[in-house]
Image (cartoon, rainbow, N blue to C red; front, top):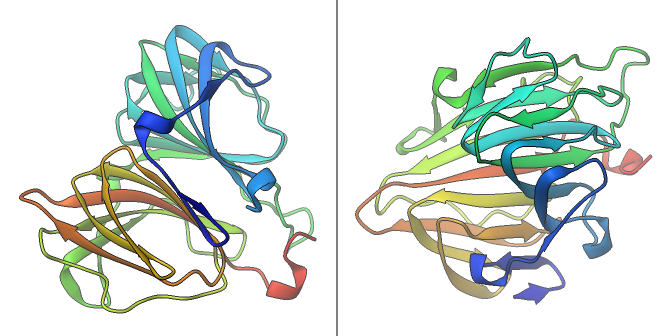
Length: 237
């Protein structure tokens, strides 16, 4: 589905293409500026020994499966649920130790503090403390990037127990890129309701009404991007 304020892609519709700097690697480009987004998000499918070249801006990487090495390996192997943040200008390559799938989120950095951009780091989702969303024990959030104002976007994972849902229909200035990692449920986007499951990708434009409820016998979990920490009048500056 491709509408003015949202896009839903299911795995049977994915189109693969090689991006500059890739070797033994292809990309499923889920969203980018051509569709009106202020960021690019794609899944890199890497063969053993495959490489992902430097990004044109800042980059966030999240390992869906396999094992990858960043640059000279100073982060150690990043395995499933591992992640890394690279600031603009970081030219380190990502190299697959084994057949791997990695989410890449790339965005031009919007400077707030001159000459004080955040530095590179890596971690694992499993090492991040969970927080209840609005006090709901059945909806847990892990924030994979620090919340301070140096960062102009956020990446979180959200886990919903079966039957749990967002407490309200949200509508806000931030846009989202969302990849379903596990389970499924119902997503409201605008005035439309869609069944979603692991592997599906959703883009939500600013002010797209949105709501999610988990269905099935297992928890639903997704990876979600949002732009934030910048004044709306300076967006794209």
